[in-house]
Image (cartoon, rainbow, N blue to C red):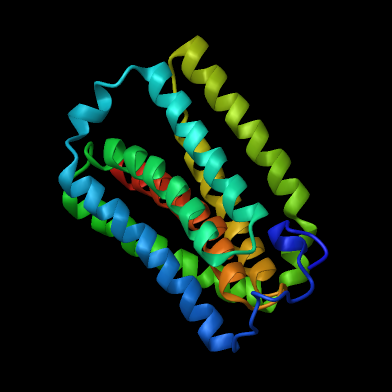
Length: 221
């Protein structure tokens, strides 16, 4: 394999047995479901109050350290087991954030947000399969838009103590684009077990962020 970076992979290696399209997509789906299951268990078993009691700086350091370590593992490795371990290093800190967020909303709203997220995700995956070139073209614009939104949101929250609802809508649109983009990339690389896990990890983060923003939007109704 010429490079270990996930979405730059173009060749199979000794570990990379070629899978059928159907099996490849099934593995992506199962990997995503594993992440969602872990998050659901965390929400059910870990009181949100215990997470909120952690010092914010310590929480942020642990959150980013775990995420970056996990991303480094699955992007650099072509071993499915190592990539799966890296995936879980991303799933767990995201689960803590989900726990803090969903605890603020009624259960019915959480399920509604999950349903909407599922429909939107499926739609964007279909569009990503149909128009992969389009999503590749808008990738840079999505990145600039996301950076701008993050800066605006941080400045608004820190210096003015306000959060604008329109930001949530913008983030939803951005991550709709990212789902289409990442799904298109997932189907453009060699179809191996490791690449399926790596692709699922990228999609997982897109989907979770999309879910949180949709939940915030419907929670303001």
